[in-house]
Structure formats: structure tokens, C-alpha cells
Length: 223
Image (cartoon, rainbow, N blue to C red):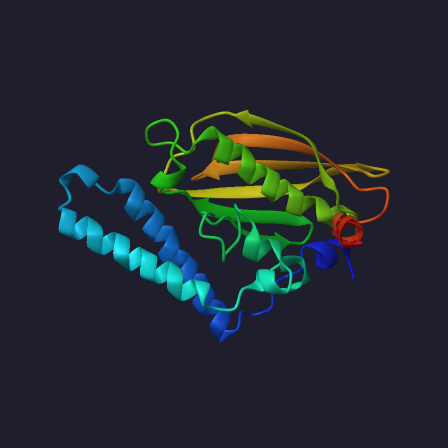
């Protein structure tokens, strides 16, 4: 099993219920945008009350459903996956755009379309999200090196604004490996035009993979 398969496994085809969870995340993602863009001063008291009540009822409905935190998020193999939980690329995370990632040999490629909830300057993605997307992208790409670690440094050069509501394409790979240090690179494009480029230094823990370290820390905390 390769490092990529161990730490960033390809997802199995989602079950029918997993597809429904992704659809729920899409609905919540849309709801977040609806609330952000809602003209509250123009709404009637009746409409506001109805919307508040419906959202409260939805929260109550979910409170009654099984919760993976009851068994431990990091013990849930699918829900623990980066592709499910990541705040940038998680398909079950309504905060995510999401950034969709895939592997082509040793290269990692992806794409995302950012709506107004990610806006910084007018019409453009907030720079913090631009940088965070590279952390996610390069964090996955580093596994092609055969090891995987935590972000040490991340340098992002913004060559142009990243527009909202346009498909942004990404590519990334490994530049070099030295002991526990992996240097990865990444780039983003709009219709083939370079928007930003990044270099990240990732350091593998002395005790093994990030996953192993996480389990060790959790075990120590439970003692």
C-alpha cells in the first residue's frame, strides 16, 4: 500500500445513503448563501418568523439522528476521510466549495467554483481561502512522495485575482524529498491563465504518519 493509498485513499463509490448526505451538504451550502444574501430589511416579520421556525425545526430533526461523534469521528473510516470532512474539499462539509481532487499518476489535479460566501475583494475570492486551498491541495499531493507530514511552511504567490462563480483548475506535485521533509508545488488557473502558485514544506512526524501520531495523542488523552 502506498503512502497516498494509506493517508489519502481513493474513495469507494458512495453508497446511496452517502449520496444523500452529499446532497444534504449541497442544500446547506445553498442555504448559507441564501442567508448571506437575504435582504432582511425588506422581509416581512411573518416571513422572517417562518424562516426562523423552519430552520429551528431542521436543527431539531438532525439532533435526533445518529451522530458519528458518538462513536468518535476519527474511528469512522469514511467520515474521517479528507474528502468527506475537509473544510476545503469535504463533500459532506457544507463550508467547503468544495475543492474536488483527483490523482493522475504522481500528479494531483482539482477544480473548484467559489460562490459569494467566499468573497473578499468585490467579485474575487478572499485571499485567505485562496491560500487555504493550496494547503489542502499540496497536503494531498505530498503523499505521492511515499511519506506524508504536517505543513511546515506554505508560500503562495498571488499573480491575479481569483474570480467568483468561475471554475478554477488546480495542479500539484512533489518537487523533492529529503529525509522527513517533502517539498510540494501547486498552481491554479482560470481558463489556462495562471492565477497563483505555491510551494509547501511538509514534515513527517518522527513517530510515523500523521494518522499514527493522531491515534497516539488520542490514546494518551484517554488514559
